[in-house]
Amino acid sequence: MLHLYHDSESLEQLLIILKNRQQWSELVSMVTVLVAGAQRSWSLVLTRKTKSHTSDMKVLSDDPI
Image 1 (cartoon, rainbow, N blue to C red):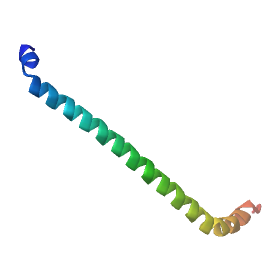
Image 2: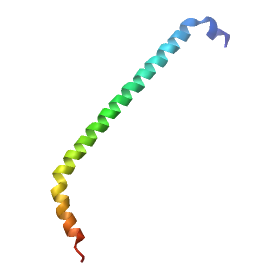
Image 3: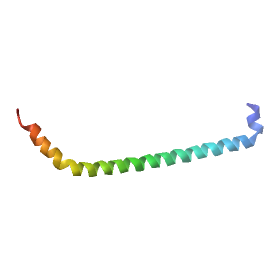
Image 4: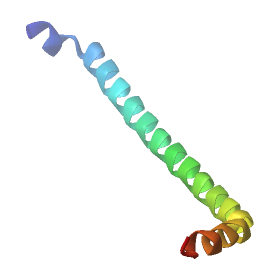
């Protein structure tokens, strides 16, 4: 434990590493938010395109056999 106190350079490096890790986590969260938004918009586009097909199928499935 004593070597940590008089070795201030390693402490500074540790702080830099922690700061970089925090920036990385923020970047990763931003990227995941962007990817999730892109997937959501793509799914909206796909549901709009396939809505006519699914409504036709829904009519078929609602009929009692």
